Length: 140
Image 1 (cartoon, rainbow, N blue to C red):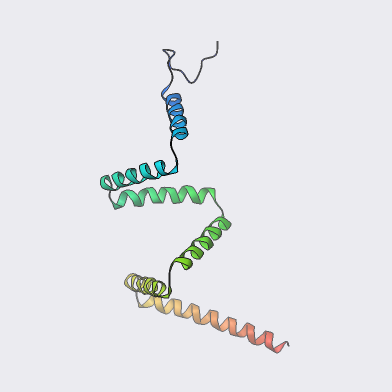
Image 2 (cartoon, one colour):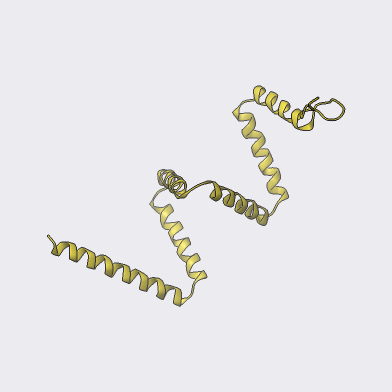
């Protein structure tokens, strides 16, 4: 006789089955706002019990799991959507401020050689671009 996987040895409902039934009933009895409210409460409680390193660790794990499941096009699409949403919600001053913060952070993390290297690469790229434009103009 086959054993019912949803029952334990005493013929009672398993913890897994009880959880599934409870979740189903709760979903039928509550709306979106209920879940938003308990999610917010849970988030507040979690933030009181965990430090920055906890969030960095779970963020890293989530990022790794996501990158294993998605390709380059996925990231391009969400990046585009995020950029569009950000541009709709912020003005020129916002971008000036984050640009300044990014510049300061970069300068704090890199030395003179870094800037020389990226300057060289930029100059070489510009030179190639100009050479390509000149050769296409000569072919007209």
